[in-house]
Length: 155
Image 1 (cartoon, rainbow, N blue to C red):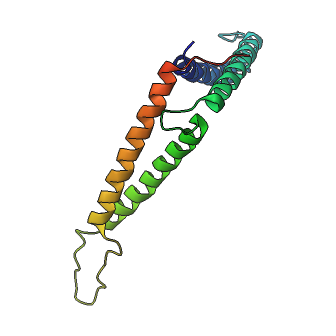
Image 2 (image 1 turned 30 degrees about the vertical axis):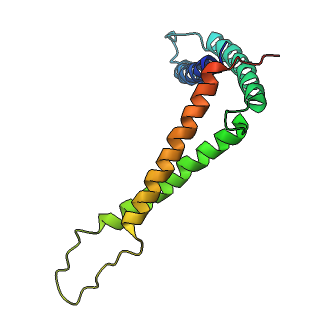
Image 3 (image 1 turned 180 degrees about the vertical axis):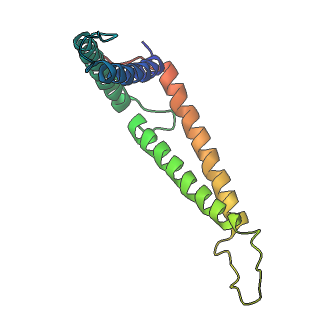
């Protein structure tokens, strides 16, 4: 199985656990004289089996990621951390730019009102945001390529 397939399966299993959790909560209690629509005990057993499969799969994904090296020489785990930080950086920079431009249309009603001044260079910030977005796209492409070309390491 390719790493990308394992990642997709991980997402499916996580969704399945969430669905089972909701179904268990909906059927764990019912009114006297009525029957629940599903057996909560069977749902709990299915959830346990799904969680066990998920645990094995996550362990295999982590082992694979720890042994993978991307074309640029960095480890997959390092690349994943870098991608997360690029996303965070992009979010912070975009938020700052949005805050800076959101008050641009502010008009004072009276001369006695204080003017609002933008404290950052928005055009320069936009260039930095674009550069971070480019780095993120390039890194994400390398990660995706490795996901689709690498076999999953299993115990």
